[in-house]
Picture 1 (cartoon, rainbow, N blue to C red):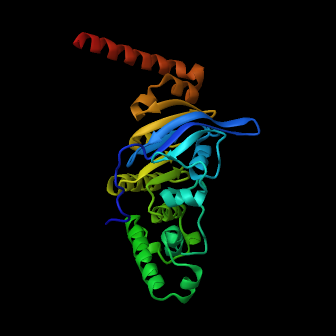
Picture 2: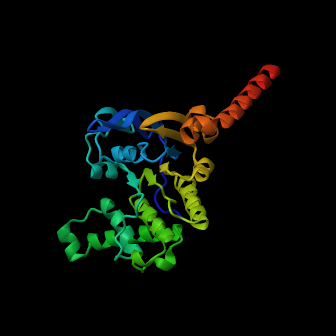
Picture 3: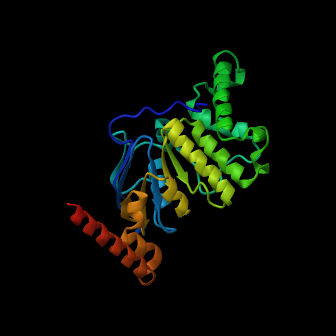
Length: 288
């Protein structure tokens, strides 16, 4: 079942984060960080707490305005755009802490995600007839598709405050999907989940990429999840990028090992990586 229109792929990058620097009263949160994300790509940002991951999300969303650098959406700068204007371009987001309306049903929460795509004004909605009624029916059908996609049919008429944590996380993901995004920012989508809930969320994330072609930036502390599903991974440490590449490349990067384990505990890991690299070099030399 198609939930939202599959994203058409174009030449060039979907979003570019170019030499961005963000600081607060002298404290540098993001220091000359650059990366890009392409259509349909699952890009992950990892790093210790305080590394600058959420600050990057806030810059992309228009909540923070960096002092240096540029952020481009399909080649055009969005630094001067307001958050709602960036959302209209096609950027959706979930949050570390669940930000839902607890006393509203699943259906009603997902309909709030459709607000940005609805054209009827206040007076037209009060009358609720003609084009406004037709628009409501069409948008409700899109939301019902999302409910089916995320397998939350049984919860659709219940207030979200009554639901298990894992289901609430799905509802928040569904609300972001209801915006028909071209890029989804997923801020720790499996934080606090048990193994079964984590596996379900990973499956939905992969389905979003493979069936809908929606690009995603994933911030997550669950390294096994990141390394299993991400196309590319960027590693931050104290606001600086220390690595960027495929999961396999990042796992072998000495700087990443040092940042996560420290020099003393990383020494054995580093020696093992060095031995593997030496072995690869010798094998390549012999084959040539």
